[in-house]
Amino acid sequence: MSLKIIDCTLRDGSNAINFKFERDLTKIILTGLEKAGIRWIDMGHGFGLGASKKSGKPASLSDEAYMELAKSSLKKAKFGFFFLAKFGEKKDIKLASQKGVDFLRIGSNITEINQIEDFVKYAKENELIVNVCLMKTYAVGIKKYLKVLEKLKKWEVNLVTLMDSAGTMFPKNVKEYFVQGKVKVGIPLGFHAHNNLQLAIANALVAIESGAEEIDVSIGGLGRSAGNAPTEILAILLEKYNFGRLLDYKLLSDLNDNYIFPLIKGENRFSSQAITFGFAGFHSSFFPLIKKVCIKYPSVDYRDVVLEVSLKEKVKVTEDLIEEVIKNIIIKKR
Image (cartoon, rainbow, N blue to C red; front, side, top):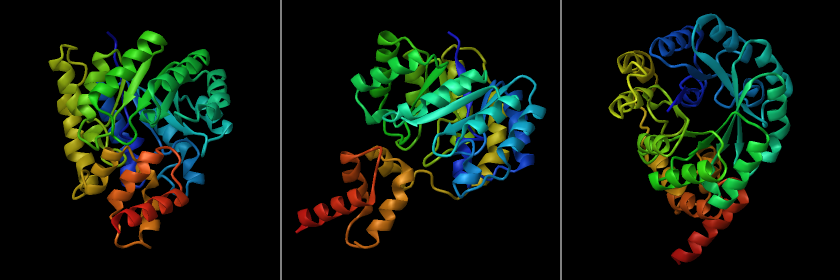
């Protein structure tokens, strides 16, 4: 079995450090990953192409500068960028193609893929390898999920990555999504785990056992919220699973010890917030709304709000919904 490992340290990991991967550190990580055996590297602003200009949270370098740095630093590894319709435009895709980017990862909530069809086609026209990332895969049941896969198969995407965006999935869920997808649709599938319930590695292994052709990882598990499946740990486990020595865990661990861990030292990745998000299937991007509304209701525990909101909605959380949930919690306490 051929397994593609995509390291997301320089992309998803940037979410955890305010998008501040400086030039020198980026080069060190790029060359270190390549030397350790990584052949696919996801990099750039955590929110994707165009986000530095539109998100209000600029990265240390421009998209173009990151592209040029990767092109000049890598000899064997392919590199790619993330793309969200919220921030990216076709001109960003064209720039990626012109600058020698190998692949584009087009993200979409699993309930909103119609918004990306034109971008998928345009990226393919520009000869990029196209990977669609289904964010919040857990938000729909198997029937809707399979319909989404069937549509993506018609679009002829190269790979579909299932994203456990809140780190809420159990191994049995992962297995079902992969087995059903492989058997009933037959499209190449990958997996992006988050570690809110400390199941990222377990879920990644189950995905591999269930037919995943690609796994996302990051050095030290660096990533949004509680982080991702750690590259260096997967390297060891793959060897134990008789895949052979695909990656050099020593070099990967050195990257973590010397460069990644110092960036996050003192931060509690398994905070009450992160664990609650995993419990509820709640995406961390909605938490500012929770905090904003909860300020008005000091007697209400935000964790109860997160859990109740997630029972009602996992993709489009609004202030009105949060207000409604809080008022119901207060009524129940009387």
